[in-house]
Image (tube, rainbow, N blue to C red):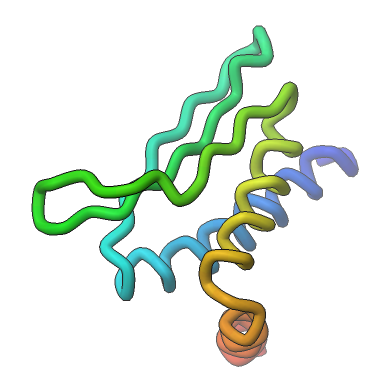
Length: 96
């Protein structure tokens, strides 16, 4: 595994830690698409039951890594900075 794969894996892990915690408390749903042509997209929507509400994240970047980085920034902003520390603490507790 080269450095790029390790960075990608770490970003995906961080993204889903933050997303899943917010998903439960804010009724969020995600749509993502990645391809070799640079059509990389992560969208996250708020839902009320089956009714789609506002889009809280639309990260459209050239690379998959850049897309995850942007989505993480948006989710941290959406959830509040204090929540991110809480997610990191939970991850540390699980790891060791």
